[in-house]
Image (cartoon, rainbow, N blue to C red):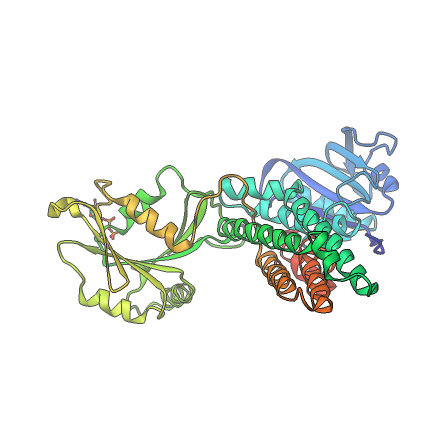
Length: 449
Ligand code: GDP
């Protein structure tokens, strides 16, 4: 990528905040051999772990640890990179970082290391995004999918499609340029069949991407129900052994009303409406307002009732406030106490499930129902952890390819549609991506990445 490389030296603490066995400060810039020496390293020992004593400006020891020096272009960013591996305490890391700033670095912005890697052609945009996705993955399935994109398997498929679109455009445009050639020439070259095949492939890729995006964003589920109907029991039953890997992110307090569990690798963000009660407590009121905001963007509402009591007035009151049009599933729990078999029934488009959370009867009915609502049909290991912009690009490209086929008797239009189809898929890997979009993508990274 022939873009001007950034020249400022950037530095950041690359490990997570808090205390740990080691902590890493990462530095990137055009020429860092002097900086390596200032931290007690030797530029001659590139890519080797060197024991070093890290000192402040007055020569006082800050820490001792390992220094790794990666001269560009063979580094993550494509520039010179230094990693200082010290002891993982917040103060010592801050002192090391402060020393980097004294030596001429500035603080890196979120995602700036990866942004430089992209600008220097070390990664394409889809790979760069998968770095953030891998770090943020909340289930093992999402992590596996992210790492596949990181190693370039999604990009490879995108490039293969681009190549085929370019070949076709050359054929169609040659026909336009040489009026003696006519449609027969394209028929002979099987051009129309090839456009059709590309459309089929784009549709398959889009499906894998749409399924994969479920692994990313998951499904927002709201659990509604009176105390003691079995909400916690059901949540625990659903979570089973497969609790999603959710950790507290520094600086955010965990919302007690929300839990994330996973179903076949899909994160289910479950908001419990148990907290939705009348209160005069100001703090609680804020929490309740937030819960309602979450409910506004729910994909599905699971309404839990005790099968012996049926729906109550309070259920109806909460139900009336739920957003119109959201999918609803009513679960009649505790069938074991009512001597009923677990079952699913549907009346006027409303789904009713009879089950027992405690006795583990019929809980699979709910799992299947949630997956159905999510639109999940399993694809094994080849899912693409797509972002919304990838889906948009693939949809646009597919629509253009189909229109190209519709315009087989108006070759100028066909050529233009193929051009647009190519441009859309190119956006995925970043060949045609405007700068402001790059800003948005990289600003969502964490600092030090
Ligand atoms: P929550 O207040 O809605 O979260 O309800 P809990 O999950 O705490 O359950 C309330 C009580 O009902 C507990 O004693 C559970 O053991 C019991 N319970 C929950 N589900 C069932 C069920 O399916 N069958 C039976 N027999 N008891 C259940």
